[in-house]
Each structure stands twice: as structure tokens, then as C-alpha cells.
Image (cartoon, rainbow, N blue to C red):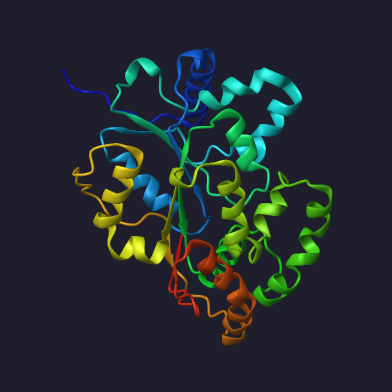
Length: 295
């Protein structure tokens, strides 16, 4: 019998996706919570890390990479009480499909940056673990800007966007409207102040539940760091990932100008020094080297 392989039309894909989402909603009581979360940072390699981890037979990802529950979706829970609580579980695997060897996870890189996310997560998942990638904040800021520019969300040239960041975010920060999408989009420098973001997590979660990795080190020796991650989350550390090609990588062909690097180097110098002292680690981020734009 000849197999029939036809691509679904757009409307059929939409119906299929809606049915799948409805099924997940209806079965929320029978679904697992994540054992760990890739919490950031944005433009630091979380897409590649997520993809690598999905290849381990005992690591079960959420049905979408970025759930964004605790940095925006949580709003529904605050309004509707328990009704949106199962919505978070609906992103994960059915418990009946799991064994004691499996670990469930998601990756939402804005969680590290959102000021309210640590407490929101702790209220629901007090025992969850975190993996956090930190990239040179100069390169991260430029990659973030280029991403927003390509997406059509950023009308300003890069230097103007950097200089106007505080003014753009002022009202959001004063009103505490951190779920506002503009807080994610225009936080080029703010997201690179890593120490204050980590500090919020260390205040509510045990230090041994948080694995912080430098992006540059991670990608320079993937197998070494993947083994470290497997040990951290409690799965077979000897398993070899076969496809180690990076995901969401695009060459940064835009010349942002030396003045941008000089400005960001000056801006991030005290923040990088605070981070090094806080973690007891010298990251060596004295200047930028923004050759690739990765997510």
C-alpha cells in the first residue's frame, strides 16, 4: 500500500494546533511540572542549549521552547485564580509517559531579567533548578538590538537606542509594569546587568539549584559542559549528543561602529566587576567580539 503523505493546508494546521492545545488543557491534572528551567539570558545561546538537551532520551522539553508564563502569562493567573494554573502544566508531558529517570524542562530566557519572576516561580515550583547562560553583555546588547531591528520593532539607530533606553523604560519601571512587551524589547543594556538579576534568584532559591555558565566557555567545549549539565539535572552524564550544530545563529554583518563598542565597554565595566566579585569568577569581558548573533 502506497503511503499517502500530504502537507496540511494552513487552516488544517491551525485546527490541528488548536485541538492539541485543547487536549493539553483538558489533561492538565495528569501532566508534570518542570524539574528545571533554562532561565536566560536572552541572546546567550539558549536556543542551541534547548535543542541539545532535547536529544537526551531522559530530558523531556515543553511543547514550545519559550513558555513565557512567569514573565507575562502569569497575569492570567493573578486575574483568574486557579484557572490559568493548569495552563502552565499543559505545556508539559503527561506523567504516565515519564519514569523516575526523566526530567522535564522549559526555556524562557526572559525569566532571569523579569524582576517578579523569581518569586512567581518559587511560589509554584520551590524545588525547581535553573540553568543560566551569560554572554559578554556588550555582544549580547548588540545582538539584542539587531534582533529587534530585523523584527521591525526598533525604529532607532543603535546609538540612539542605547542612549534612550533609560527614558523608554522609565515609566515601566516606575509603575512596575514588567510584563509589558516593551520592557523585553528595549532593555539592551539593562539585561546585561547580570549581578542584580542573579541576586534576585539567589535570595529565593538555594545556590546549588542554580547553574551559571559563561556562553563563550559553553560553546568552546560543548561536550564538557553538556556533561556538567546532565549531572546537574540528574540524568545519564555519559550520553553523547550527536547534533551539536548551533541554532538561531546569523552572522552580524552590520557594522555598528567602534563608538558603540567603546560606549558599551565603559557602561558595562562596573557591572562586570560586580558580577565577578559576586560569583568569584573573572569572565574576561573587557571588550566585545560580536561576530555572531545567536539566540
